[in-house]
Length: 312
Ligand code: FAQ
Image (tube, rainbow, N blue to C red; front, side, top):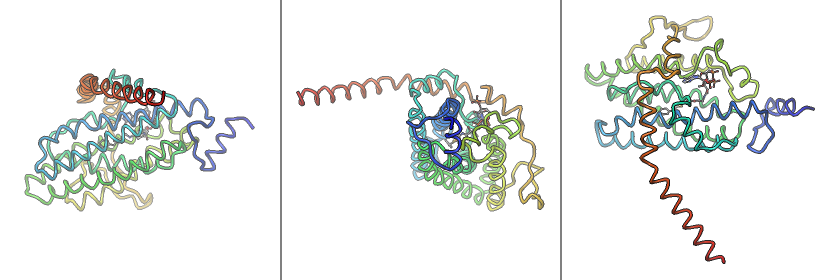
């Protein structure tokens, strides 16, 4: 049997591929692409929420938000490690992010204008991320699958903290409820875009489903997210900003309006409201952290020199 045939039979039987196993070049390449984009999304995703740490409305909210943003940094690090198992160097990936070459999720190119946006991000953005990532727990590449299992546990806490902020606002004063509705209006459609282009337009889905990298298509996951969000919105007493949203008895799902794909494509191309700011902030943070990296390497070198001289 050819290597490729054997590999495809192996993943079709629900076995996990590990770093040292033989894999097709295309499998390695698309995984590096997807895992790196995912890692960058976690790291850039720290910025819109980080913007509100100093302005959180209470000490309790500040502590929770700090922990959440720190978790996202941790997710980025697991994911860079998973990408490295495929033979790519972390510095190369970070350089691609800092020079604006790398893609990361479109959602993080929108601004956080009010405290309610922190609720909406936790509820909707982490909510959408979980729907996608629960599916990816069963991805065929072992290191990615294991990273997803750890990450999903934390994402569900993030989703609940966001929803709890939304409950507090939606059940608060009329002005607070209005803030919550305004945040929902602005974050709903960009959250649906997180799932990627429609199945008809998705370049990688078909091959990646065969290789069990992706377990569900972009549209399937998007539909699942819409279906679960309707009841959550009703509980809040808010309204989803979509006049076409309607239960379809025959399909057993909600129908919903058309996504603005022109907006999606522009944001992905780098022309969203905050793309330039996000990349510049990341580059700045990286440059300002050079001394920390140098100190860490110098310390590690000193420790190993000490060990070697003790052993001699
Ligand atoms: N934004 O053929 P497909 C999080 C690109 S985690 C930007 O369908 P694929 C946690 C795509 O890369 C959020 N680009 O691609 C958190 C491809 O470009 P390429 C991130 C997008 O890979 C919460 C092209 O379009 N999650 O947020 C987007 O099969 C709160 C064609 O698309 C992940 O990355 C987009 N929305 O499916 C953190 C999950 N959609 O490379 C902080 C893992 C598509 O050909 C705060 N990734 N593109 O130039 C995936 O599951 C997949 O990569 C998809 C896209 C589903 C995103």
